[in-house]
Length: 423
Image (tube, rainbow, N blue to C red; front, side):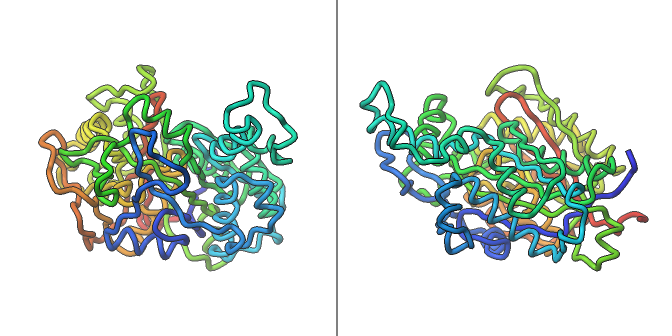
C-alpha cells in the first residue's frame, strides 16, 4: 500500500425523476418522490405494481442506433453516466497511459431487462419449449455476461487498465467504488472510472420479489409507497439507475486544478454467513464494516456528520441498520441525522450504492442533508433522527454511507472533505 489518498473529481447520475447530477440533487433536496405505477409492462398480475422508472431516450443522450441495439438498458445507463462523469471531471484521459486507467462497474442483476425481453421473443411469448434463436437480437450474448458492462464503459472512455465487474447484490455499487479506490491506493492505476448500473424493472424481477414479499403492495398512492423507517412501511419500491465517478489520487487532482467533491477516506465490507435474505437483529456485521471503514479513515464516530442509510423500507432492514448505527457510533448515533434517499428514487439494487455515494458527496458539496420522504409515523424501534420529509441545512464534513444486500453482504464507506487532514 502506498497510502495514496483517493478523491472524486467527476460524477454523473441517472436516476428516477431526472437524468443528470443537477436534476438528481434537485429532487433530493426538495424531498420530491419519483415512484409511480409501472409503465414498462402490464403489472396487473403482480403483487407489487409500483416502481421508480427513468424516462430515458438513449439517442437523446448520445448513444448511436448501433449502440442502442448492442447494449442492454443497464449498459446504456453505465456508458452515458461514464461519459458524463469524465466530462464533469475535466480530465483529459488521452494524456494518461491507457494501461493505468481502469474501469469498475457494479451490477446486481446484469442485463435482466434485455434477457427477459429476448426470452419472450425467442419463445414466442413462452409458447415454444425449444426457442427459435433466429429471432434474437444479434448481440444477445452481451446480455448474458455482465462483463459486457465494463467492456462497454472501457471502450467509451479509452481505458485499457484493470476492467472489472463487481456483483455483490445490493452492495455492488459501494463495493465497485471501494475496489477502485484500492487499485489507486496500491499504485496499480492512476485513474478509475467506477460506479454501478442496474435496470431491473421487468416481469421476472417483480416475480422474484413478489415471491418473498420484499416489495410493497401499496398501489393506491405510488408516490408515497416507499417509506423507510415509517411504522406503516411494508416493503421496498424497485427502481433503476446508474452513477459513475472519476476517481484519482488527491495530489494529482490538485495539480490539475480539479474540482474535488469528496475524499473516499474509508471502506469495508463484511458478510453475515447467516441467511440469504434474513438479517440478525443486532446489526453486528454492518457495525463491524462501519468500524473498519472508520479505522481506515482514521476517524472517530463523533466526526460523522450525516449517515446516508440503506433504508430500504422493509421492517427487517430498517431495524437491523438502526441497531448497527447504535452499535458502531454509540451515543453519537442519536445526535447524527440519518436519511434514506430510497424514499424518493426507489431501490435500484446494485446501482443504488453508487447513487447513494453521489448523494453523500452532494450533501457535503451543498451542506444539506436530504430528507426521508413519506416518514409520517415513527416506528418506536427506529428511534434515531431520520430527517423526515424536509431537507436540512447542516455543515457536513464527513458522511457515512452503508449498504445491505441479500446474501448477507454489509458494506460501509466514509466520505470526507480532503482538507480535514494534511495531504
